[in-house]
Length: 404
Ligand SMILES: Cc1cc2nc3c(=O)[nH]c(=O)nc-3n(C[C@H](O)[C@H](O)[C@H](O)COP(=O)(O)OP(=O)(O)OC[C@H]3O[C@@H](n4cnc5c(N)ncnc54)[C@H](O)[C@@H]3O)c2cc1C
Image (cartoon, rainbow, N blue to C red; front, side, top):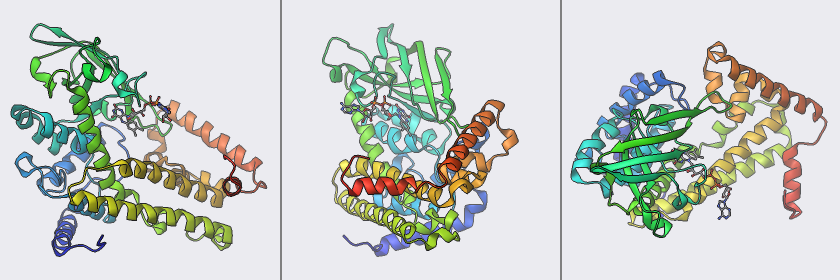
């Protein structure tokens, strides 16, 4: 494994940097999450520019609007946008998984109809797989599609649907044959999200954002041309989609793996850094992240050689979240009750959007919820002020081999 750019990759990186330097003034603020319709309109306008520059759909074939490059170039493009502090694409699921599934399983007519608007952000998409009683056991979904005239009639409920409230189209997995083994009776559909028979209910998070939705289908009629792949081939299409999701998660890792100086910025000048235990904990977090970075490079090397992404991508996703949680817990331990100061709280426990919004722009319900949350945590922190840091106890348990 060679960790340095090849000459071609170095030239590509230089080109990406030059493009970003020239266009960064046109970018919307690089924040996590989507605050509302105005945000998504701005983010999709920027996504269109990225697509035209070949920085969205980097791995898509050129004939469908992509840059026709490899995973290393996709990582370079993501990393350079991240390093410049400039927003990337907003339709990660659409560009990362749904588009590739249409490229692999769609008819040529479907590819020509859907891929261009998807990549440019002219049409938003969502992935309608998970249901209240079918998450990990995805093949157990209950949403039914029954033959109706020349097409299909769809009834059922989906949940955790990212960005459904900003989607024009959805990729929906439904049961078309309940009398065969569960993996064999599924079909994938392309469905319109603005139809009267579709109801989208946002699920409000504590941050005030609503990234996920419940989606209800009450007799949605679609034509035969809404089928993606063959009737009964839904499991294969779903597998392709999720394989690309893992691949895209890997490509985005570089974005997740910020250096220790970025992660620990909120405590950079804190006297707590003189404490050897704190420095030890920082070293632990940093080492874990470095390990993940090298695991990513190894997986990318395999990808470049034509291998299919394996479990390392899924494991990396879990590790990335765990490392972020550890870093946040460390910051909260060092700052103590000061972590509750609004912008620090935002950085510490992930309420990023709140810090960037006017407090007054939030609705009453969200403000009350956040105030109660902050007051509760504050009271808890005051009570435990003299208590040894919780993280130390956990680490002591782990060293002793106990389950934490
Ligand atoms: C950020 C995010 C975005 C998402 N966006 C979308 C989206 O756009 N579209 C979409 O369709 N879905 C989406 N999902 C849903 C997601 O992909 C999973 O389907 C869902 O989170 C898992 O289902 P569940 O919540 O019902 O959990 P469950 O499947 O009920 O799992 C709950 C727990 O039980 C464990 N478990 C499950 N089965 C077993 C078993 N057999 N043995 C042992 N342990 C088991 C799991 O590991 C887990 O800890 C999103 C999820 C997240 C976190």
